[in-house]
Image 1 (cartoon, helix red, strand yellow):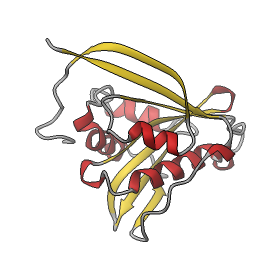
Image 2: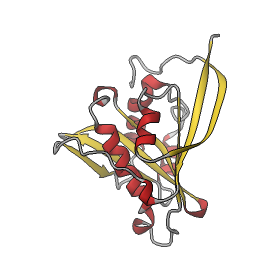
Image 3: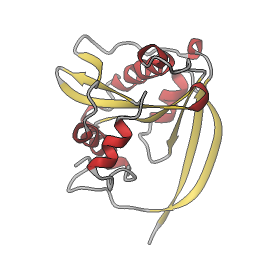
Length: 187
């Protein structure tokens, strides 16, 4: 089996003032919170965004496991739409001590390279910072973090850095090359 060198960057933001928002790409783009946990919709987003960039860790989850994940207090999915069509998403995972991880973030292949990603990330980061407003009893956010890797889109790392994230760890490993899941990327 062939392998590839995979580099993973972990990035963080420690103040809401660090966020450098991207321009809104146009009035046809909206970002809306998916307030009703839907394992089918979340799996669609995950598989559609990650199919061609080798996201596979959640594909084997059962519906019950998706429900358990999505119903955790503070987990939020924010979806970008272009004229009513899902274009991408950001999933927020609240952790202990006021930490929020951007667990997943990305765009469906047909929506990449159209300046939607910077805006979606800006909204997602802002919502990570004000997560406690929507979840009474949760302490305020003190840190937002994310990781990206060399298999993600070519602009991923630059997008995070442009929004104000700083790299705090870089790891390199050899990884087995896995086929893209589904009959076509994103299926």
